[in-house]
Image 1 (cartoon, helix red, strand yellow):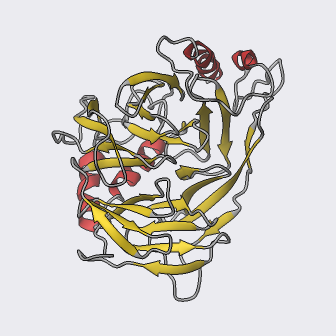
Image 2 (cartoon, one colour; image 1 turned 135 degrees about the vertical axis):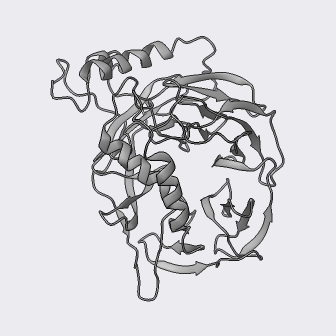
Amino acid sequence: MAYARIRGRISHLVAAWRPGSSPSEPRRLRWSIPVALLTSLAIGCTEPSAEGPVESSITIDPEPFLVVGPEPSPGTTIESVRWATGLSDGGFAIADQYGAVLHLLDSAGVVRRTVGRRGEGPGEFGNIMWLNRCGTDSLFIWDATRRVVHVTDSSGTFVRDFRPEPAPWELSCSTAGWMGALGLPIEYLPPGADGRRAAAPVWIMDREGTALSDTVVVPIGENRPLGRQTGVAAGSAALWVGTADSAWVDRRDLTGRLVGGARVGVEGRTPTPAQFESSLTEITTVSPNPRAQEIQRQQHAPLPIPEALPPYRHLFADPDGLLWAVTSATGDPVTALMAVSVDGTVEFEGSLSRAVRVFEVGGDYLLGKVADELGVESLVGFRIHRLDGP
């Protein structure tokens, strides 16, 4: 494990010299000691580094500053925490998939308003899968059942909706106001262990759903537990697109043109049965329907465990333009994170003290959810501290 981690550090240094990498975005954050020391560092291993620990200009508090449980106040129940985002006033919004509502919270996590209900009319939801702010105070909510993006104002009042074409599988919002989209697979492939991956479109669109870029076709995720999953992350000036075939993540400008990329993640790790079972549970609980969950389990449970874990699990872009990746596997007791700048420099590497499904990396916070042994979910927020380099 130490060798694999050290090899990963060396690859980050090589990535900075990869042809086509773009230095066009400014880098605000830097390591406080030379990056070359990464070659002798193995974070999380028992062997100490001969050079001592590397200090990053980014730190994350070990304990959350925000915990919002399933019954945050009398008369309010949060049935599920499908997604969450920070609001411009310091509060937070939770997409409750099972309850088909939005919960709007203040900065202390107190629910100040709950809006929506299940249905097909204005302000009603079918299956909420994601929400975010896209460079404004408005909330953009992806409803996978109705295949529309609902737009509300900052108080949760319905304003409008639009239907992206093609339908997205995953969305990511830039602070500049545009959205990166990974579409649904062009063809359906049943669960399998043969490594096949369906193709899917990737494109950039504005807040009205109008395409801004050419469409690029990429392989979408493997339909199996612990399979490679393609992710998109809308940075400050470009879209990150990673297929998890390796630790390399492409970077595309607003026309869809490839302008470089960076390496993030850890390659060559062997999965465990516990990780497989946790990933299986994650797949089966996407649907709130118990019958659909059972069908998913019957289809996926007989598949063999993959030979290797993907190098990363989820991708995010923060307001400073850094690419963040969750490098731990589902089922791990902690959440390992890595952040790199556009030139491939590692800006952060560390772990949260518990298993967290990360939703968003903001300027001074990280949002996600945790689940107890019964599957009861709570929103958590961790404070991020950043120091500008010289």
